[in-house]
Length: 394
Image (cartoon, rainbow, N blue to C red; front, top):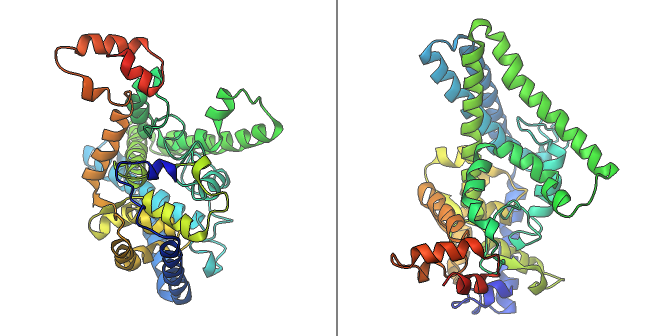
């Protein structure tokens, strides 16, 4: 974990091998206690959430049939956005993690669930469950860390293209479901590395385009058409609801792994035989929570408890709030920072990091009002590494 260990203040320097093994024992105990106590109360919870989401969506779509009236447009749009947020966050994300597979209900199972999202569930599970949660915050391995378009760590070489990353991040927030679809396809890597269109990639592309067409037809053709004279206003309502859902989901994800103080790691410096305790430690250092009322937890899919989710991705989401105090106590006991803050603060911190790392390391510290013009000119001309870029722009 050299990227962590070479910091001026190494957050894990005080931990021994025995400490990390003790963490494993404690977290394994918490996980097993939740598994042993899952039951009817948990099943009722997810069924109630699914039932409420479907009622909200159906009611909102009915209201939008009369969307030429401003009040109907506003009520229907907000309701549809809420339904889409619930579908993606508290339901879809967690069902696809297998959190509810223990119920043996084929209607609420990770192998059969499909969500209101541009990316097919099977593609998302491959990149998120099997890649992101295995290689959490490892540079060049966890593509969720910046989605392949952002510089997220000082040790990543700065390039001139990073100047545009705040803009790319804003665009990605607005079209987040389509950005995730392209990410799940590994479209960026395929084009950059000139891999070519393999039969396997062509099959996955066909599946994704089919899902995109279905989603687009539902939201931007069929539902507006059912509104008859209100076609245009219903179309704008659906566009707005999807925009709200995308920006909200993007913000929640940003809060979980991007705020200042969340650690990143380098594959070359990790033990290839990483122990379970070391994996737990990486999740502790590489995740951040959102504090707030129960409604924030529900609308974030309980990713407001991102630390707990990354420690136990297959436990029912409604249990994260219950175990959070015990998890935090372990952070305190072993002298580690439990990274949590209200959502506005975490969003601001994440965007600050995006903006800061769009520039070479140390560039802002050496910039004054008097030398700004020459510094900007030098910055636009250089394509060097971080240290060289600072010198070139001096």
